[in-house]
Amino acid sequence: MNRPQQLTFPWSKPNKSNFNEYYFDDVNKELQKKILEHEDIVLYGIRKIGKTYLLQALCNYYADKNKTSLFIPLAEVSSFDTSIFDSIENMDIICIDDVDAIKGIHEWEVALFNLINNSLISGCRLVFGSSQNPTSINFSLSDLDSRIRKINSTEVLPINNANLQEAVKKISQLRSIRLGEKELNYIITYTERSMDNLIDILNKLDDLSIEQKRKITIPLIKEII
Image 1 (cartoon, rainbow, N blue to C red):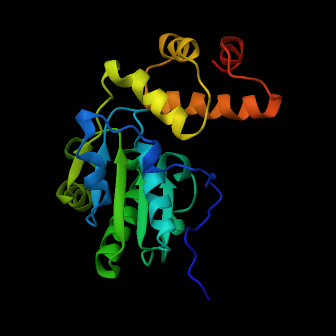
Image 2: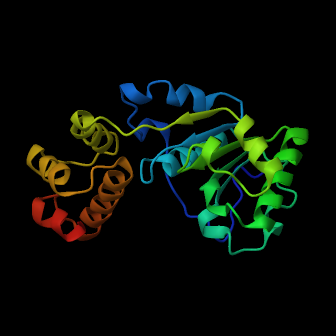
């Protein structure tokens, strides 16, 4: 039997996230290299900066290499039973987003601590996303806090404002989304300046344009934003 490339759980959402469509500017020039190394790592940074996209892209990267991967958004699944962590340490990689969301929830802190220990034995790579620097999360479970602090971490920094227009242009071209200069300027001027938000707008514009068989114009953009 072939091994599954990616496990699917009730919270999973199909995505096409990939590193080619993430704009790494100078402030994040070492980021992709660190992500693609084989060590465990914590990616931290302000909300809506693209950490979730990077974690999903990493899962897709492993799946493309016929390796097993799993994405777990802790902020969404902490209402589930912790048994979802049972026996998953035999994956090649598990990307766990919003690890800081379970701070103070004892059963989840214990479950995560056990998963880290089991993964050390099995050789499963763990990559975490956090809105806080791992040294300042301060989990209630001291053993978990110590484990997380020992994992290498790197900050995902905001793209320089001067590069946002270039970033959106590059991503739209890679996706064959026809976006004129006027429309591009409108998006940059009138929307939240975060890559997470801009990529979401591009996705919605592309879908709506195809669905309605309309060119991407400012009136169409206004329907999205």
